[in-house]
Structure formats: structure tokens, C-alpha cells
Length: 163
Length: 103
Image 1 (cartoon, one colour):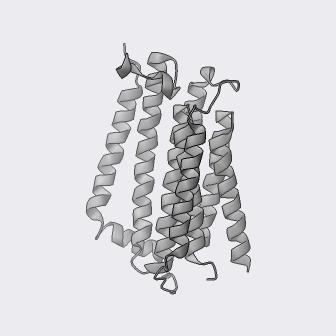
Image 2 (spheres, chains in turn green, orange):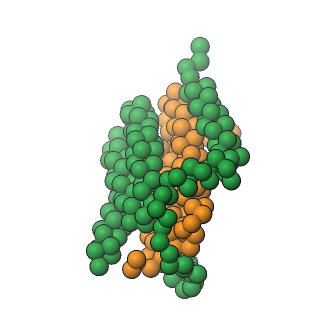
């Protein structure tokens, strides 16, 4: 019973904060609600018994991505006053499209009989994770490091002041 | 283990659609990036849920989620650098006003 209550709270927080992110008039408040949504998603990971992913979620999404977004909002703040309209003219169409997609996805997710395997999570998931990353998935792992380096260099070059 | 997998998938689908609405309806480039982040989070919930309910031993879902994290970090860094560069040149980040190719 307890996991269901926690799941309900976590999904309510996540979805409520996500709705606030996309509808709030003040873009800075949206960024703070984004942090709340990330916390909700992290608690869903804990509920799914993936503690490492939950910690990575807090560190990367809240510690890096949300802070970076707040920085970018602060740097471009002058034009982001609250009386500016944040929605474009096609927002009703977008809302209809999003609701339609949710109905389709929800119908699929609900009606398909998923081949669930009831099994306990292995004790030392983090050990297995490290071994898999450096054996089976070594090539994607190295490519990800090159991607991060390219993104680092690229973002510095793009945002640099030109003389 | 009493929560059915469908519930997680439904929450992820709702989160994805909320993010999609944000991407399609925001005029602010940073708001669009926030919508993309919500959509990536929804994908990660799906990956972890499928790992937990179908593939507990080999951890494929967790490894894919870690790669999604990596790509999301790279994407947001480059995206915000682009936003700041455009703001410096054009003094706006309203996407409707960034129409250099139309002029």
C-alpha cells in the first residue's frame, strides 16, 4: 500500500510541476518548477529501485542542467518581463495535439499486455553497471566521452564574444 | 511489488505530452529547451520501468538511461550557448523573431 501512495505523490508532484513549467508566465518560475519536476522524477527512480540513476538525475539534471537554464534566463532577462506573452498563436492547436497524443499513447500503454518478469533486482547493480559499461558498451561509452568533449568545445566557441 | 508497469508508462506518457505542449507553444527559446528536458525525462522513466519489470539482470535499461543523461547534458549546453549567441547578436530570444533566413 505504501509504495502506491508514494507513487501517487511522486507522479502528482512531477506532473503538476511539469504543467507549471509549460504554462507559467514568468520563465524564471518555470525554471524553478522544472527543478521540482526533476525531484519528482528522481523519486520515481528510487521507487523503481534504481538508486544510482536517481543520484545521477539529481546531480546532472538539478545540479547542472537546471542551474545552466537559470543562468541563461538571467543573462537574457531584459526582454523577459512578465507582461510579454509567452505563448505563441498556435497554442490551442498544440494543446489539442498533445492531448491527442496522450490519448493514443495511454490507450496503447493500457491495452498492451506487457511481458512482465517478476524478479528481484540484483544486489550489486552498480558493480554490474560499471562492468557492463566497460565491457559490452565500451564503444558507446567512448563515443559519449567524445560527444561531451565536442559539446564542451562547441558551446565555448559558439557563446564566445567575437572581436 | 504491487504497482503495475502500466502506471509508470502512463505517467511517462503524460510527462512527454506536457513537454511536447511546452515545445510547441512557447515563444521563448529557453522555454522550448525546458520542454525538451521534460520529454527526455519521460523517456528515461520508460527505460527504467522496462528495466525494472523485464530485464533486471542485464541492466540494459539503466545503461541506455545513462547515455540519455549524457546526450541531454551535451544538448542543453550547446542549446543554451546558441541562445546566448543569438541574444548577443539580435537582442531577442523569441523564436518568431529569429528569422534571418526569411529576410
